[in-house]
Image (cartoon, rainbow, N blue to C red; front, side, top):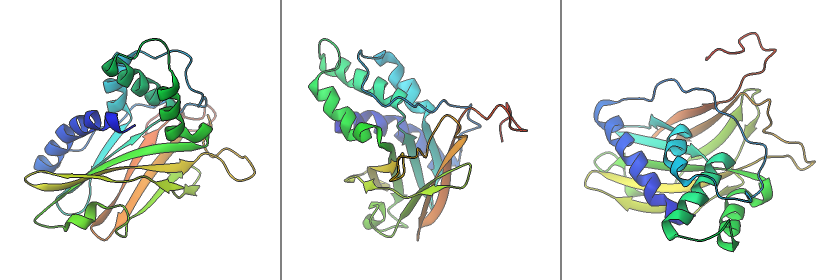
Amino acid sequence: MRPASGTFLTAFGVCTGALLAVGCLAGPHAYLSLSGDYRLPAEYADAATYLELHDTWLRTSPLGLEGAVGAVLEDPVLGSALIAFEASRSKTPGGPGQAAAEAWDRLYRGGERLPVRVRWRFNKHFHEEHTISPDSGWKFSLTDDRGLSLQPVEIGKMSASRDARDWLGEFRLWFPRSSIDGRRYMTNRTRTLTLTIVGVPGDTSLTWRFLPLLDAPDAGTLQ
């Protein structure tokens, strides 16, 4: 799904520029809905919804000294809009074809994996270029509201770039959606998922909140 990276860089670059300049953070987020259907859509979604959905599933945070990170939880509702967006750019006729099916499988592997796309930047004056590599001592975990912590089953190849001020890197993390015995980790009862990033330069957490349990004492409130 590399063709979409430019869109991600543009959307995240604007937010990160402000983040690095004035230390701004995104405000409270509304509850999202975590999808349970990981099948390739039979028809393309509305491509015009992709950029708005991207922003809805994007979380950003400072990371270390003069650094910042953005992470997009690529729920299938966003993946559906993404393949439609890419098809509209390439003017692919008809419904999702072989190319879309292959891209969908790379993202979700038959519904067994949930991807998180990470984009970060580190100031050249304070960090070495290798800092942007996810293999340079960084640790990642995805934890739900019950305290279940998952490690990535795969870390994708990093795409590196630079500007006048920062080293920039982008890659995907894939987390398992089920145990060996088939038990689903992420269900319609999952209330939060938190991506934790820990490394020598610093650490941070980014959280996505979903519809609360109706029988919970704090149902309907943001925490």
